[in-house]
Image (tube, rainbow, N blue to C red; front, side):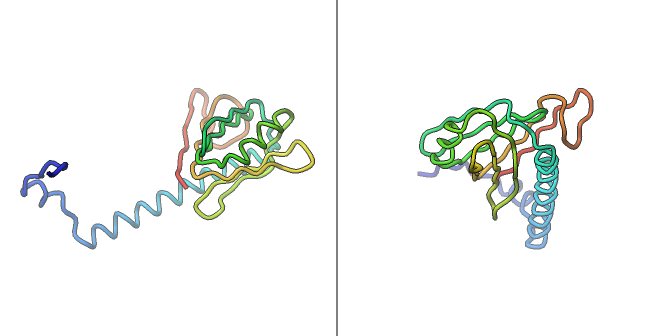
Length: 151
């Protein structure tokens, strides 16, 4: 039994891309993803440079969790976080500051310091959402850009 509806041949022929067109689309996709990642790294660099204090922290999830960190002007949401670092964040809790962030291969990482050892969180996805005034790029009055990129 087929679960996929058949596409009329005329439409399939219209939508079909040649190998050259497929390569071009993949090249464009890779370029756009690289530009977007560079933009996100720029925002993270600004936040780390400002030693942004953590004003809110939410840890949720079962085997693979999510962590939401609020710093002045931005909310960083990380998905695909292992339980160990998530628990370490819950224990560290108060008085944290963003001390590092970046990419590790296809993954995103942030480091929060507040105790003797920084807590490093590695995640498969990162979402940056502007929540108000604060350091960062692309801050126009009344705008709230959202930057999201999977690992």
